[in-house]
Length: 406
Image 1: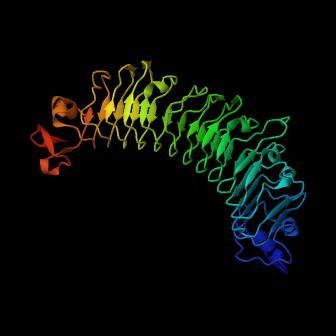
Image 2: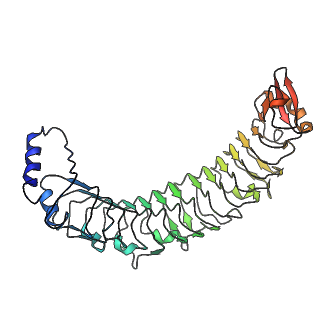
Image 3: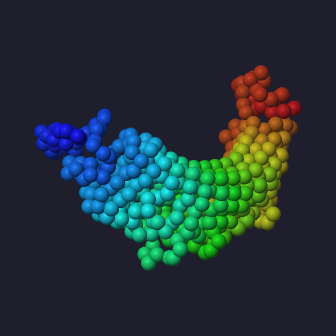
C-alpha cells in the first residue's frame, strides 16, 4: 500500500462481475505506518468487512466516521490498545489472542456495535459500566481471558442492555452473583463454564425472563443457591463437573425446568424428595458422582418424570418408597454395586430398569427372567457362561443366559 497497492485492488474489483461478493486475501501488507487508522479509512472505500489474520502493531485505531461494518483481528500478540472514534457503522468487532487488559474504554463511541468478541486476551476484570452506553450490543464473548473480578454498574442505566448472549467461559472467576447482571434482563444464554467458581448465587431478587441456557459446568461449585432467581424460560440445567457434596436446597422459580443434571460431583446420598418442587421435570441425571444410596425422605408426585440416570456411581441401596412417578419410563443404574434387583417393577408398572455392570446375585435375578426377556430389565447377557463377565449365570432360553454372581 506504499505504492500502487490501493490502485491494484480497486482495478481488480472493477474488473470483476459485481453480481458476486468478492473476497480478497492479502498475504503480506506493507504500509507506511499502521495497518489501522488512516489505512482503515482508505480501505473502507473498497470493502465493508476486513479481517487481519496476523496483526503486528501494539495499537489499533478505528477513526471517527469509518464505514467498515465488521472488523476481525487475530493473532495480535502485540496489541495492547484499541481506540475508536465516533462510529455509526461498525456492528461486529472480533479480537483474538491479544494483550488487551480491559474492554476498550472508547467502546461507547461504536454506537451501532452488536457483537463484541475479545477471546484469549489479557482481561483481568470486567466493569459493566463500560457496556451500558452500547444500546445495540446483543453479543458479548470474553472467553479465555484472565478475568477474576466483575464490577457491577455504579448506577442503573436509563435503558436496560439488549444483550442476549454473554460468555465469560474459561476465565478465573471464583464467585458469581447473578444479580450483578440485572441490567441485562433479556439474556438468553449465559456461559461461565471452566472458571474457578465456588459459590453461585443471586444476592438480590432478579428475573431473567428469556434465559434458556445457563452453562456452569467445569467449575468448583460447592454452594449453588438460586432462591432469588426467577428463570421462567430455563428448560435444562446441568451443574456437571463441579464439587457439590449435597444437592442444592435453595431454589428459585424455574417453572419450565425439564432436565436437571449433576454428573461428576461429590454427592454420596440422594434424596429424590428434593426434586418434588419441579413439577415440569422429565429427566434427572446424576452419573459418576460417588453416590452410595438413593431414597425419598417424604412422598412426592412428579407427573412428567420419565427418566432417572445414576450410572457409574457406588450405589448399594435404592429405596423409592413414597415415589409417585406415573410417567416413569427408564431408571438406569449401570455400573454400580447393587447385589439385588431393586423392587421397582411393582411401583412403576411400565418402567424399564437397567442394571448392567452390577454384581447382582443370581438368586435375585431368577424370579425376573420374564422381565429380562421382555426387555424391561437390562443385564449382561451371553450365549455361554464363558462369555459372561460374572461368576455365574441363569438360563433364559437355549441360546441365551443372563450373567450374574453366585
